[in-house]
Length: 376
Image (cartoon, rainbow, N blue to C red):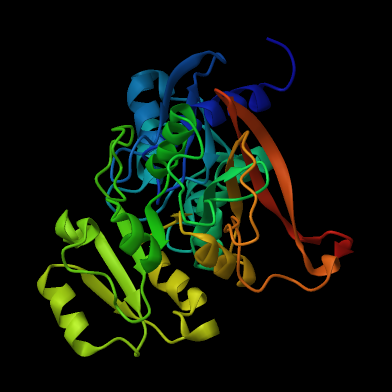
């Protein structure tokens, strides 16, 4: 091998961390590599599922006695607190690791402090190796850990002219089976899904994970329903009601609340925001406390528009079919108020474009503090 060995091993650790994409959240994706005193790979691990073993512990257990005097490369600062598992710093010290190389420090004050403890114990510590790549890998988790709200991914299936249905409301199916499967995979890597009551009343969806890709059991279904029009017999209530959270305002009649609670659904009242609908910023605070670090929004035009108007869209997944639907009254992917000047439009950065049979998937993320004609 040639080049910087720390960067090489950290790149390997980042690839390991990516394996936790479908199970780690709301924890971060973390990868770890133990290199023995001779510079050879001794053990590796990654955080596969929330509540499971941490990457450092897996790597140290795989390395065994070869850890002593070696180097641990890890994509995130090792934790220094007792959570669902003992602190990783304790395992590192017990293993006799001489040096720890970290990509990024932990912004969560509850889990931080690991590097300080290691230094105090005489372990050599290096930080910032491939930090940008590590932050990008965990940007969903970082939004939650640093700002106290979930990373919001807006998903929609659209025609080439941006319609999500015909003027009569016919929307099944705009995209083909391959694109729809890819859309379902998004549920596997998010902690919760959110729709509006209009979707529940029109389609009676289950809103479940059903591909079996995520090893965890945590899954939350959120319905924005100002006046609690959701029917107690809706599938989102009847099927596993405990995983359903219906968000409403004080305008909801008490008898509707009672009927839904008796059916087993959880209710959350928040102050009214724009148009009398639930204040989305308050909803995000409540979901972050669940905890929901990554939220998938699969609403209609109105819900999508509300999230865009509230400047809460971090990521956009558009599944585009080669169709022209047309019609002045056909709904578009994003409704709401929108902006009056292009200078105020939010700029998204297109990161990837994938084929799914005849359809394509566009993945775009927000460009922080940047708009069409520069910074605001």
